[in-house]
Length: 464
Image: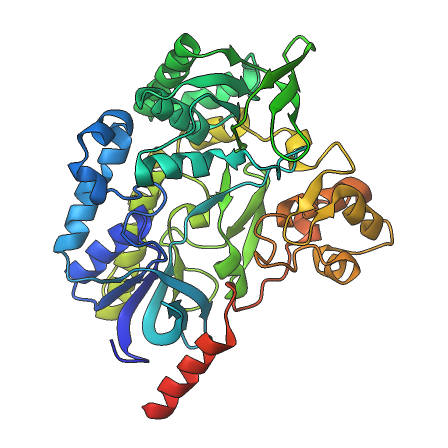
């Protein structure tokens, strides 16, 4: 591909939303390029889906939801869309120039429209000991299983949420032993949960699947519900996990491998750096890009699809990718993109379970901000809660001013891990609503970029 080549549509991310959009757009005649940072398409949900197709054992433990992605991957392979793997997109320009690096070389393509489908990331979990060796996120534990068919035998899982139960279930199906599951979701449902479960009946299959996972987990492992005050035990590495059960009793379970999780949030670093408008979602406790039903953002020609526009799951991500592609096709061909009311009803049905899940699995406050002053909040800069609180006490007005006082959010991840925790700490101290506190200002490049990579881009421009 020539430097600066043009495509009608450039899609960033080859997960469910990106693949669905690419299939729809290329079938409609748009020249479509997909940039993805993984070696193969599938995203986090369908990671290694093509490679695992030949593994008989993987078919047994990854579950039907995972294998449903094979049809999508096959359709993408048959499409005319072009895929470039192992590409790290680090900037979208004002004129829809997309800058990325592949194999240490920076490059640029031009786009008629850009679709950001970068999905979700796990919410950071700043609890005591979460940075110790031996502690990983549940998402990382699932990645091991999908990528290499390996896992940690005898691990303890702590947290809650659909990804949490699915991963424990997959570990058990793979024949791995799970020493204990420490569930932080409420031990009993309240009236609000039952009320929100009514619209969730539009997706009965998902409800029944969750019940089946939990029932099987309870049958095969030591299961403790309603856990609170969770912390990792150990000095130089994890040796166990300590918590209070639903009756207030303090328990400690020895373990060398501990997987923790408290839900996922949209990965908004690229949408923030592209200066799209965002809104605070009080139900999911995170920021969402402002879009219409078709994913059109506040910046002309830039669309968002999938969990990156709000956590809704793989099925809704596929629908949002198709919707964005239809709108882009309609704009190109001067036709209608469909009846908005029909698509709204379809999307409501696809996301009907989310209010119930979001409310049931709201992360405990103690997992959003640490209880202990010595707990690390910003991993890149090794800042503890006490460090951040000392800066906040000096009278900072928001996360961006806080950077100048203590460097929180200035490390390699540019606040991916700590931004929501920092925002919550400021809210706790000042009482200012979180939507008014705002997010760390993200500037391109959103990924670390060497001078050598950047120089390659200049050399290519000069040779054109």
